[in-house]
Amino acid sequence: MSLEHVCETLLRSNEPSVQWKVRVHVLGEDPLSKRIRDLGRQVRRSPRVQALLAHRDSRGRLRPVGNPYSKWQGAHWALATLADVGYPRADRSLFAMRDQVLDRWLGESYYREFDVKTEADAYRGVGVPRIRGRYRRCASQQGNALYFLTKLGIADGRVDALVERLLHWQWPDGGWNCDRNPSADTSSFWESRHAMLGLALHADRTKDAAARDAALRAAEVFLSRHLFLERHSGRVMNPEFLRLHYPLYHGYDILGGLKAMAEIGRIDDPRCR
Image (cartoon, rainbow, N blue to C red; front, side, top):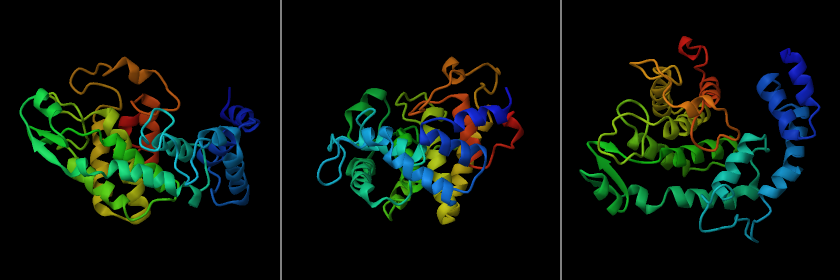
C-alpha cells in the first residue's frame, strides 16, 4: 500500500486530530494556515477533547485537583494528550491546569536533596536522592511538562525552573534515571525521552543553548544504542521496545524513539537506520 493511499484513507477519518496529524506531520502543511487552524478548532470541539476536559471545576482545574498525575486522566496527562492531537495553541482556559502541573513538579521536595549509599535509605528520605554522584529522579515528569506546556503555547516564566532542574539532574552519559539501586549507572530510555524532547523544544523556542546542548547529549543515550540495541552485545535491550504503543504515555518503543529523533532534528543520523 502506497503512502499516498494511506494518507488518503486517514484524511477521510471522522476524527479531526487524525486529519491534523497527517496534514502537519506527514504532508508538511503549515500549522498557521487557515485549513490547519480550522482543523485545530475542530479538534478543540471534538468529543475526545470534550471528554478529556469534562471534569474541570469552576476555576478550570481538572479533577482530581490535588493529583494532576492521576493516571491517565489527571491534568498532566490531559495536557500531554492535547499537545499530541493538535489542540490550538495559547488557550487561556488551560491556564488553571497548567498551574496544577507546575505547582506539582516545582514543589519544594524537588529542591531538597540528600546523599545516601543504599536503596533502602533512598526510599526513607524526602526529596531527590543522590547515590554515587547521580540524582535518582523521574525526569520524564518535569520533561513531559516542559514539552507539552511549550507545545500548547501556555508556558510561562516558571518553565525555566523545569529546565534548571533537568539540567541539574542530568547524568554524565547524557540522560536521566530514577533507579535507586546503587549499581544503576546508565540512563533510562523511559526517563530520558520526554526530558530530551522538552529541552529540545524549549531550546527551539527560546534559543537556550544550554538546553539545546543537554538535549543533544541526551540523544546520544539513544543513538549510541541504535535506539534499541545493547551497545556491547547488539541484542535487543528490551522486547517491549519492539512493541508499538499509542499513546506512548510513558515507557519507550522504537517508533517513539524514531519520532523523537525526527522532532529534535537527528533523524538523518545513520544510527537511526
